[in-house]
Image (cartoon, rainbow, N blue to C red; front, side):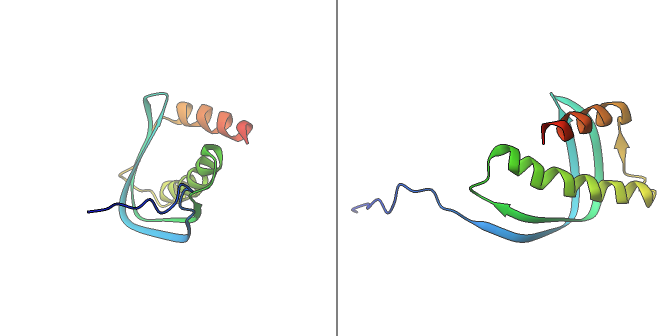
Length: 97
């Protein structure tokens, strides 16, 4: 069977909205766990293949944290968080952008 190379250019894709149901989110910082929560839904928007690593973190991290904050307000019993470590992480990430 002859294999033909189609293109050496990476595939550029985009997802406008991604909705996942029944998701467990575990957030680690430098190998240390700082957050674990189970959410009913996780909605992510504007994901692109050609984004830099920093842009991908920005697009994924903040919507996740907003939804986790909503779970905290709702009194989600499945939430485990190291508040001090999470605060340090958020401050560092906010200053990076």
